[in-house]
Image 1 (cartoon, rainbow, N blue to C red):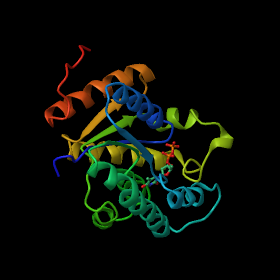
Image 2 (image 1 turned 90 degrees about the horizontal axis):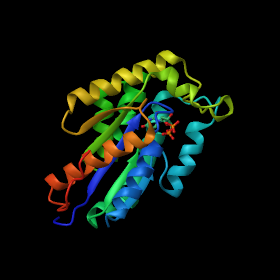
Image 3 (image 1 turned 180 degrees about the horizontal axis):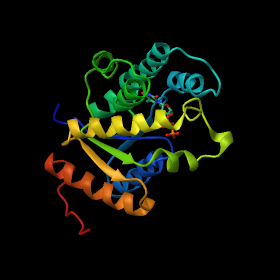
Image 4 (image 1 turned 135 degrees about the vertical axis):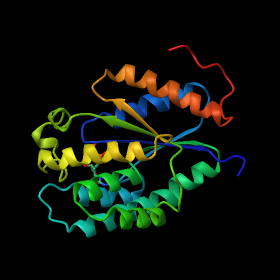
Length: 218
Ligand code: TYD
């Protein structure tokens, strides 16, 4: 277990800039010599990417629990075949959305019971928890406006109120796990967010004895 890596997830509503931040962080960590594996959910594996296509298809009607099972199938596949092996090999794993997305979207957004979601999430994640989660917080209207009409997925077709519930849900999750979550203001410039996330990541890696260099001044 000595070589166990470090697991970072990125969460937030649509258009909050998660993927951009994850890419920035990957480049900076690799520049320091870290081995980084990047993945996303739903997706990250051949099966997961196919499931993603189903889930995002505009206008496709899916029962809320069927949506959960599709998401969890993608998560199990990603955890088993990508995340677990990378962590076992001491790598840093960056995952664009993970278990908190299900709590926020299907739990707070669609109103499914949080306890049950949490239990089945544990099954799909093999009990692996992120070491660090960046929550990019943003008012839903600003996020949705960042996407053009033709870019809209099944989730982005939902009412603003749905996205409001998700935002509030995420903030609740962050309050319940203060050590793991770092809430970032997604309205800041992408470079500024990247600087902030990079420094926080280095500090956390240092605490775990995985980084022995200097932490650059902010
Ligand atoms: P993503 O590609 O991150 O969308 P965006 O780039 O627009 O933020 O995620 C795809 C969609 O899947 C997103 O609308 C949220 C939804 N989703 C859930 O509802 N539950 C989940 O557990 C996950 C992982 C994603």
